[in-house]
Amino acid sequence: MNVKELYMDCFYYEESSLAHYLHHLLAEKKISLEDYISKIDFEQANDQKVAEMITTNTLAFHKICIYSLKMNNNDFVFIFAACQQEAIQFYRKRFHQKPLNCHEYSLDFQFDRDNAVISFHEMRQEFTSFAAIAGYFNREEFTYLF
Image 1 (tube, rainbow, N blue to C red):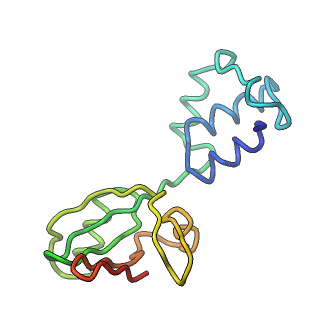
Image 2: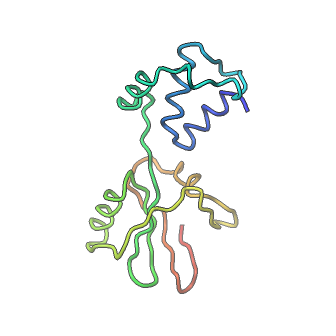
């Protein structure tokens, strides 16, 4: 794998810290996009500069997670949101009640949709604004509605 592939993966998987380190090393010409990742030496990075870049969000990361909110004993809704509080707030506004619980799921979780397997991470790319409902799950019928 080369640096360019790793750098692109950072954006796809929202790895802000690694992306900022790579950006810094690229800007300082310590590595190039064509280099193999084995050439990366994070000791050459200025940690203070990278920390400032992360704090100011130089690369404009806006991480979105997926949360499962329990509606009742059998029904759950999946909501894309920046944080657990935002997911709960969105749920309360939409359903006019408090969820029974709220748990973060992995964006890598896969399920069937339209005769294909898709992950929440892939599904998230379909949305342009957040918080948003990704779909529903019924435990009794073991059905997903996405």
